[in-house]
Length: 249
Image (cartoon, rainbow, N blue to C red; front, side, top):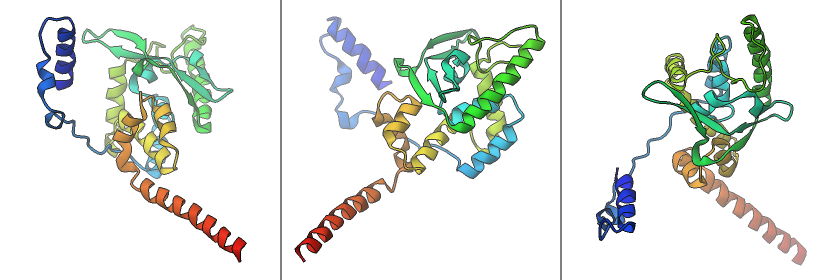
């Protein structure tokens, strides 16, 4: 709320509607702070259990896209086959869908206003290939020949899935593990960081506008980074010192 007021009153000041932005008078140390709670995630063995339970359901591919690729809900429902390159194992996130209060679905540009390319794990490629064949057969029974303009995630009648519907079905399914669709996206990040993937790569896969956001959300998942950095520096210097000693000797 403070950020919105600060921005709005700042614009009013620039337009000379007010002489000074009163929200700017509050010192930075006294401004409201968002309390970050540790994000909930699950480990790889539990993730495998979730995948096994979901494999024969329509929600399996959305689950794959969130957990293995880090896509957001709206990015999953907006994804079309023309943006998926299975031969080169990558997909392009170029749009997102949102649902209005009136229940209408509209497509908009990806969050942060930037498209991104996401490399696909081999497992995701396999499951997407399998689903594309199954979806094409399903649509053919309806008298429809699918092409690249079709959404990857569709309902049984071929229509796109609504974002809120995806949230509802996922929340009901994942409740057993205390998870949601968005928490599975967090899980994707936690798996990468546990594998010592650089935070910059994590940021790019998740589509965060800056690495600061990634570090802010997931810093609690990287408690050993300082220790590992210290050990690495120590190792390099010790090796150099030992080599110098050997050379002198």
